[in-house]
Image (cartoon, rainbow, N blue to C red; front, side):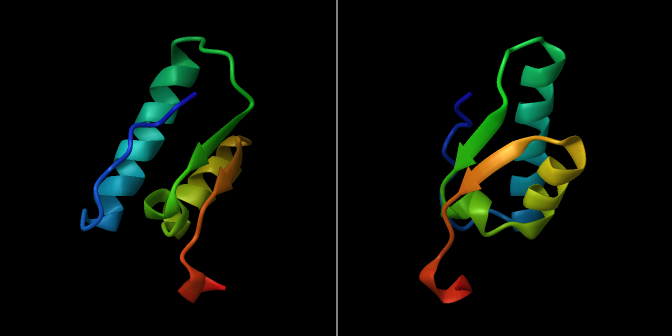
Length: 68
Protein backbone atom coordinates (compact mmCIF):
# COMPACT_ATOMS: atom_id res chain seq x y z
CA UNK A 1 0.00 0.00 0.00
CA UNK A 2 1.50 3.31 -1.03
CA UNK A 3 -0.24 6.51 0.01
CA UNK A 4 0.49 9.31 -2.42
CA UNK A 5 2.94 11.94 -1.24
CA UNK A 6 1.40 15.27 -0.21
CA UNK A 7 3.40 18.47 -0.44
CA UNK A 8 4.37 20.24 2.77
CA UNK A 9 2.13 23.10 3.77
CA UNK A 10 -1.21 21.33 3.49
CA UNK A 11 -3.63 21.72 6.36
CA UNK A 12 -3.04 18.87 8.82
CA UNK A 13 -6.78 18.18 9.18
CA UNK A 14 -7.02 17.81 5.41
CA UNK A 15 -3.98 15.50 5.43
CA UNK A 16 -5.61 13.32 8.09
CA UNK A 17 -8.86 13.04 6.17
CA UNK A 18 -7.10 12.39 2.87
CA UNK A 19 -4.74 9.81 4.36
CA UNK A 20 -7.44 8.00 6.29
CA UNK A 21 -9.79 8.12 3.29
CA UNK A 22 -7.17 6.52 1.02
CA UNK A 23 -6.39 3.78 3.52
CA UNK A 24 -10.10 3.24 4.16
CA UNK A 25 -10.84 2.95 0.43
CA UNK A 26 -8.07 0.41 0.00
CA UNK A 27 -9.36 -1.64 2.94
CA UNK A 28 -12.96 -1.44 1.68
CA UNK A 29 -11.83 -2.53 -1.80
CA UNK A 30 -10.25 -5.64 -0.32
CA UNK A 31 -6.64 -4.62 -0.98
CA UNK A 32 -4.58 -6.89 1.26
CA UNK A 33 -2.26 -4.99 3.62
CA UNK A 34 -1.36 -5.18 7.27
CA UNK A 35 0.39 -1.83 7.71
CA UNK A 36 1.04 1.51 6.03
CA UNK A 37 4.08 3.79 5.86
CA UNK A 38 4.24 7.54 5.59
CA UNK A 39 6.67 10.41 5.43
CA UNK A 40 6.88 13.18 8.02
CA UNK A 41 3.85 14.98 6.57
CA UNK A 42 1.74 12.02 7.70
CA UNK A 43 3.92 11.13 10.69
CA UNK A 44 3.54 14.62 12.08
CA UNK A 45 -0.23 14.23 12.19
CA UNK A 46 -1.32 12.72 15.52
CA UNK A 47 -4.94 12.53 14.34
CA UNK A 48 -4.02 10.24 11.47
CA UNK A 49 -1.88 8.06 13.71
CA UNK A 50 -4.73 7.81 16.23
CA UNK A 51 -7.18 6.88 13.47
CA UNK A 52 -4.87 4.11 12.25
CA UNK A 53 -4.57 2.78 15.81
CA UNK A 54 -8.36 2.84 16.26
CA UNK A 55 -8.72 0.86 13.01
CA UNK A 56 -6.14 -1.69 14.13
CA UNK A 57 -3.85 -0.81 11.21
CA UNK A 58 -0.12 -0.92 11.90
CA UNK A 59 2.01 1.95 10.66
CA UNK A 60 5.54 3.24 10.30
CA UNK A 61 5.79 7.02 10.01
CA UNK A 62 8.71 9.39 9.75
CA UNK A 63 8.66 12.29 12.17
CA UNK A 64 10.53 15.58 12.24
CA UNK A 65 13.58 15.75 14.50
CA UNK A 66 11.80 18.48 16.48
CA UNK A 67 9.14 15.93 17.60
CA UNK A 68 11.62 13.69 19.39
